[in-house]
Length: 381
Image (cartoon, rainbow, N blue to C red; front, side):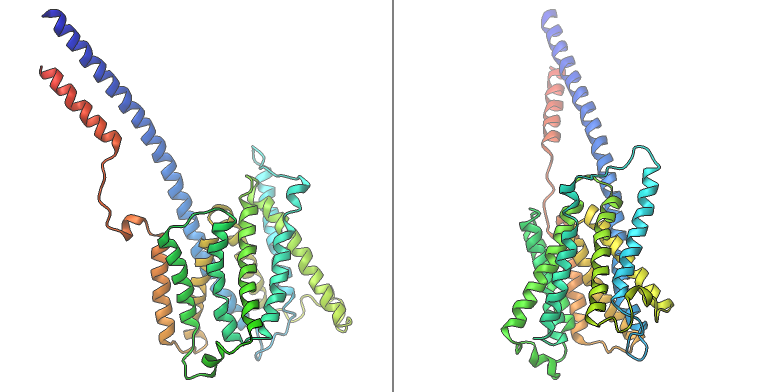
């Protein structure tokens, strides 16, 4: 009898010991998960803030550009704006990289030519895209081109899946399509206007070039994200490489424009600041800051976040234009805003907010409950 009680006591102690060890390990695991969840939440809050800031700056770009005009015309060479924006981004990135290099450990910087040679490619894609844009506008009117430009929302999602291998849920695909529908709806004018008839009356070449333009725009963004996440290099070092080639390509464009014009107005570096005002400088700084925010999102978030930011910026621009430029709001604008907000919620909201999912008990909790019951029974016996 005494031996039986001793065995029962030993078994009970063993079970209590195993439960204690398991609970200790579970506590450590929970603490580790809580730490990573806290870091993840902090990172998400950061890119939420950056995405909202990008939306505001992107919407400001069109407004500032309009305000920089004088009697509907530019008194400055508009081609100098992207060049100076690239120089600004290069200078800011160089400053922050210099600050990083003063700290320990030093930031990671890959200097192999196989990696560096990849950074001119986004600039080349954008160069081709700009030429395709001009070619498209020779076949379709501005309104049709704006509406066709929304195809880049869907093409970004497709290339996001094909080239980066990111899986999107069915709800997220529906949200992306809804975003394209919402932005298009907000841009469609009343059918009493001539532009409504011209939407489907353009030559087939115009539609083909429009699709190609959307694909090139998405490809440039997807490739940039691939570069930024290819390794753990410093964001500012990656920016320096991107913006160095961006500066070179924009400088080449200015030189080419001079060559085509026969240097009638002199070389570009002698008249680069001609006609500049405070508003013009605000356009440059706004464009440069927008580029820096986009590169941050490419590194820490993804292209879809950027697409949502720029799409919401377009709607915000329309709303602000109501007060600044006597823009008349339409029913299509309000419907587009509602559809885009639904799309935003569908894409980023947690699944349990979108679907009524039953609460499930974790397997670890079930096993612990069974062990506790068995210990109680053995103790009572």
